[in-house]
Length: 377
Image (cartoon, rainbow, N blue to C red; front, side, top):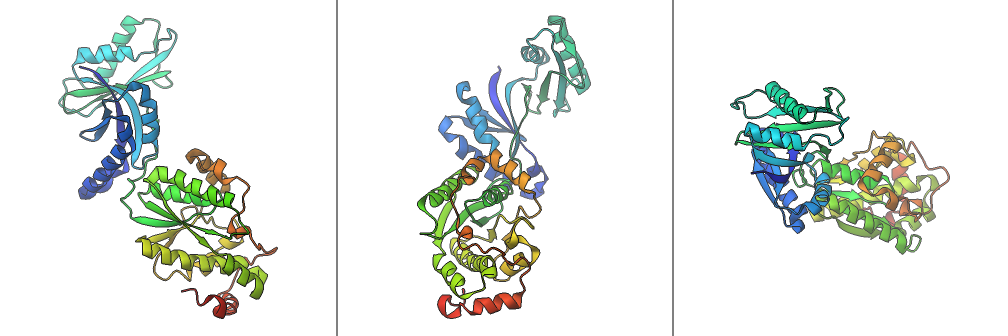
């Protein structure tokens, strides 16, 4: 008996050896959580995961959910059938092109090595059967219009499908701990957070604002970014912190060129405190080397110096802006990020921010704030 399924594949989890069960349990949990409102079920057939018992009218919507689940490498709409050869032939014919002038090929994966025919024989016989029924079709092994894929499993079943839809890949969210993302309203930090979810990390987020210099629309933009990111990792808990008093003090007492450097050091101090309170194991920023003055090696060294207990992860450090924009468009944060509402880093922005700060000079400027802001710890 045949039935329609959505076939789910994972990749990197295969390499996890004795720990594989831990990652598969998380992946199963995340799949069930993402698809539960469709009334479907997840079944496991060896290394293949199947979504079954779903209304085919919502099949594409289910696939859209699956595409953003970290740990899934690809999905396919498939027909699951007994691996009986006559049934295989009829099902392969159902997947053949309807256009009489089209080309096709058969690709066979025979996981069941005890099956009575080998892969080449199966492909040849299925192709010959299709041509016997639709003589005007042509076989093209290199650039076919339709690639009919047959996957024969060890339990006596087989999958037949044509399309393989690429998904997020990576590792299941929840397998790599929790990080605190410094979420601005720009393009970079949401992309940085997304890339960490692909490596299995759950997210909290902290946003620094400068009200009343930054307005409610800027805050709403960040909240929307956090909601969008939450779709990839089961939700993001966002904390907003005012740094207005810090900026005003730096602006009043310190050299203007050091404004961004000093502000970022205070932001890291605050973020580390919040992260520890939340049980996060690292900080995550959207810094890309050399993109702006605060992202030179020297400036990054100055911010690293105030993180006493947690590492700072920078997943975008070697990416180009065009690459960041491409990912932002892909994950749905681009149109939100480009809304023209200022974030705290644009307030009191100096004309010539320092690009190669020295620690002794930074400490000298910070000392001017000691009585006003404390030591920042």
